[in-house]
Length: 207
Image (cartoon, rainbow, N blue to C red; front, side, top):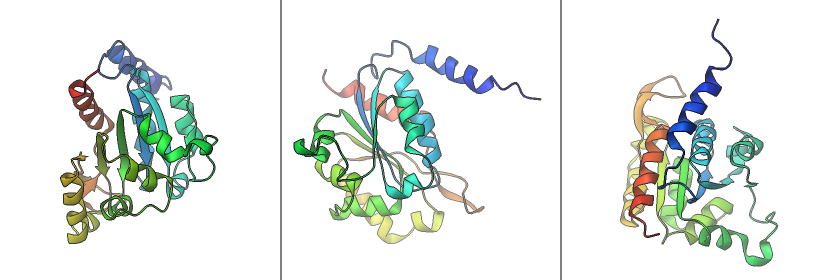
């Protein structure tokens, strides 16, 4: 029988490794979570970023909320999760603009074909897409996650190229077993890989 404290021990080891990490300590991170099966990985990533000293604020789409609970993200970050365009307590300050201006790095993980298409096309019909439209001058990382046939769709690839032209960084996707049971490209990059990309951006950003 596997001891139930193995998960906690793994987290404690990560926390020890990341203590005092100057690249992430105090970094203001905005984590956007869209409605892909890989949304569960966002909890692990948010936890590791917070343990490393980052101040993580999150936006979840309605579809993401069908897969994981906002309380899971709030529990590991200590910050409120925003889910709707019109339920933000600072709306008198234009909430989505406030979120975009008060962040150092933006991450979208998982980034579905839907949110990628919205950003590439300038569509703003929910809190996450509206905030991302205002974040185009910020360092932004997308971690795509979708079925392999969706990833190889010419329109999706065209949208990815548009994001790259906007100087957004794309991390992944990886090849492996997908949620549908098939094996192919489309798995979201592992949180550690995404965090390395954040560290690279943080290390190149003037203090």
